[in-house]
Image (cartoon, rainbow, N blue to C red; front, side, top):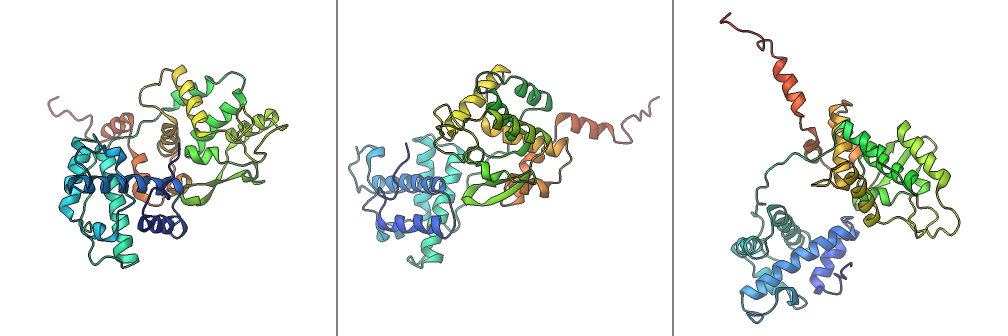
Length: 324
């Protein structure tokens, strides 16, 4: 259930959220995330300063009375204490606390640098918690082929097309669900609407074209509510993210890839296969995936064990044995 963050926020928050959506082009989902983080922080501030009863339930503390005076009274030590509270009491991991830091920096930057409503920025020197770098999980080529072979059932053409686009184009879940028939162009390219409503063009390979054409031959037409939506659900509406997640999980389960694999891992898979086996340059990969900066793309340039082994064995000294 979506939260009506505008009605649950004080005016100064609403102004900030409006700025982030209309001027900065952030999606409603992203702005909702800012709301959750700011609400959590100012609930903590009110609780820690005795502005509400000490036995108040954290989830029930209202932030509607948060004003500029309270916002400006925050010090960096308050943020450190909040992050400790988030870790020890709320069980927030490093990723979650890092996101909260980013939300606070964005909010205070808006108040200090953009609108000049506060005289100092208490979080200007705030650093994000260090997050250990992990290699993203992905399917190898054989597993990807096995996943496609696992598709069956009443909606097999639709499901096969969904998996094919994920594995070949590396799109996000929201991007796939949002594809319209009108986004498929005559030159076999696809217009994708990504984060912040930013559009990009990807070119469809033969597998994608064949999968789309096969699905369009059986795609419902009569009674469809959203006629331009490419992927249609059993209820004759645009397919929902939850339905796509369910069907991906179902087929992953059929090939015994349950633990730690998800819809987003298919995006990792596409990027990894393009880089490792297709030799795609990272700058091109960045545009295909719709990343804003190269640092994000570089997580997909991890090397497989086989590549590392091959690199070591390619050393001209690899076969040298001076004892012989």
